[in-house]
Image (cartoon, rainbow, N blue to C red; front, side, top):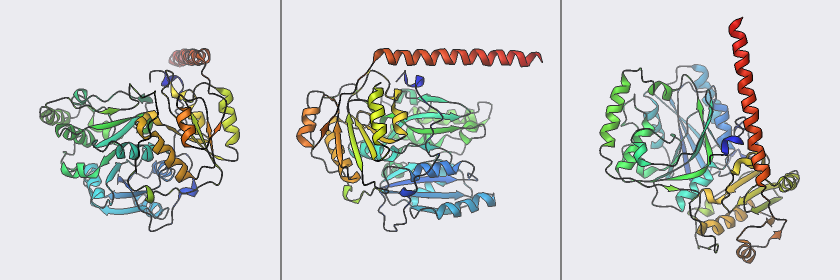
Length: 437
């Protein structure tokens, strides 16, 4: 949403700390998602990526890390320490062949139906795997799913551009990290068919489109892409490189074979059924296998219309979080940015905005899933437009309605603009002063 930038906190990166309760020593843990990482002397920032994986709310994963011929003994030894952290982490070694071949090597050892490529310096929000797993399970014809993304490091930005297969022919709109059906990757020959100077992710997405495969775009910022000067992608995109001309020729060769527009499923959907909340009987695959580590005895669920600008609601839930594990589900699209308060809530609770990754017919199933897997003791319901249906299906406690203030919202945006204008002017003055010294 266009207002998100006014409220986003780039310092609130996921993975700064790890929830030790989520570390598994269970050897018979059944994975449902395979994370794959091609690793080459990549230990500098990997600690934060590791924390992101261990902090996932969906714990049925395996992580296959392939050392692609690292030359640093420190980097190689680091992987041995990583392996000891959790039974779900598997380490393999191979001769150097590049990122694409490293991913293919990892996929060869994957035991699940879903592949999640994750570079050793990028970050994912705690609900990333869980929301994408649910969106693909409920959209079985889609081949992959991705979220909006955050750029951080050398450059900072938010990306929530709607997927457009025609624009994808010109530039890659999405990142490498997504949840992908393994069978689709294998059918297309994997990542390694791309030449080494190619952006292997873009090349895979284009081959997907050529095959009339479509994605799901999940409408929250779930992926953080670290921007660095020396990154491989920066090197590939350097237009001064000789390979750039050849790369674009190869891209054109495949884009010419994409003969029709491919439409993605994009959340939140423009139209949501607000008349009645359907209760579609749905058994999500492998629900009985889903494990939640670090369960808390006192788990509370709040069902709200949206997070809004309600400071009183925020303070009340924050107070409850001192002694209880808090989950928040929101059910309605808001004309305002959900990030007015979302990142503040995320400091002490787990948030699921169901409009961003599920059709309304699956919301009741997801609520039941949360109640079952988190062992929820109390459910609090605010003023959603679905209150009657929810009260008929769950034992709930009604609370004061969530409020939205247009004035507070606009004042917050004005404050942001004023402070950034002041900051920019200050930087310019300092720069001008230094240049005269």
